[in-house]
Amino acid sequence: MIVLGIESSCDETSASIVKDYNILSNIIFSQEIHSEYGGVVPELASREHQKNIAYVIDKSLLKSNTKIEDIDGIAVTYGAGLKGALLVGLNFAKGMSIALDIPFIGVNHLEGHLYSNIMDNKEIKFPFISLIVSGGHTQIWRVNQIGNYDLLANTVDDAAGEAFDKGARLLGLSYPGGPEIQRVSENGDPSYIDFPRPSVKKSKYNFSFSGLKTSLLYKIKQMDKNIVKKNIHHIAASYQEAIVDTLLDRIKRISKEEKISQISIAGGVAANKRFREKSEILSSKNNISIYFPDLNLCTDNAGMIAMAGYEKLHNGIHSDLLLEPNPNLSL
Ligand code: KG4
Ligand code: ZN
Image 1: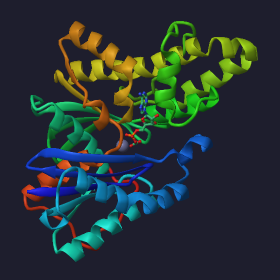
Image 2 (image 1 turned 180 degrees about the horizontal axis):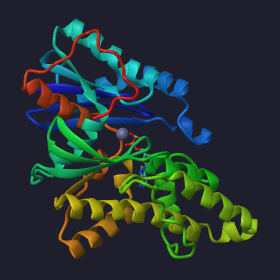
Image 3 (image 1 turned 135 degrees about the horizontal axis):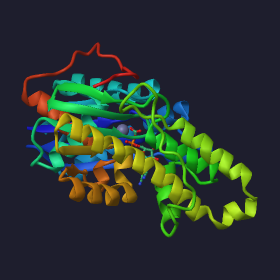
Image 4 (image 1 turned 45 degrees about the vertical axis):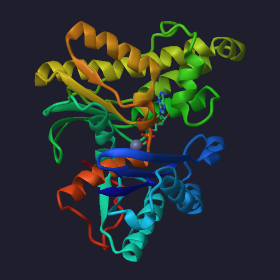
């Protein structure tokens, strides 16, 4: 069976071909237009998707040596995400579904991130803990089975990726901020500034990252501009360390309390080098197995959507042409 995957929920236009559970192509067009604005501009994102979607799909067919008439189904993200951006992919998928007379499957973007990990680490067994950590989400789920999830922790304000993006902006770095902070931090001292490791009152596990960003703002304001410039690698490294430590603290505590030692991490922030390094230390000290997806499957891509859709189609599930985009879709 061959499934075409389409992803357009935020600022990546992506298409993928999956055949018999193997990703044959995964073409990702990252919209650079947003970098000068310090964040994703929704209207521009929709227009960029519109401009590139046909090209990206055509390229994924070519790269995988697949003829369009050989596709058995189309998997497409229908939420969560930006409504206008989602509409582009969803309507394209519906049009192709009618034209080719094949089913289309609406896929939850978060379930896609979950799949990025399951398909890359076949040894993961249910139940396991999943941390989905991206620009829009910082959630920890207990994954009992595919389709059966319990939410254990959520952010009460900014997502961790958003904290990277907003922090980068304060430091004069471009968007997306995560890779930029990682790059600048390379030779920095993570103990240069002792940023708070934020927690949420009255909640055991929830995250709150907006105070951390404010703390960075105040630190920078207190410091002489030249000192900030000279020590930007130390400041960035300290800020990155606070985010990473906060994520690892919850993983450790939840793993212990839930008595589950298999943890999967997914989403854009899972690409972070320091996060991966410190996870390895946590994992070996506490006898926890922590799984990260391949780097190119961390950030938004259609391969993970095609995989999730493939599984649904395999189980006889597909969607109705009246399916609408759902910007706030949860797992
Ligand atoms: O999963 P994703 O591509 O899109 C969403 O669903 O949000 O995640 C994008 C987020 C951005 O906030 C970006 O700054 C962050 O992931 N990110 C990183 C890294 N690469 C991407 N954060 C930290 N370190 C990275 N290497
Ligand atoms: Zn995502």
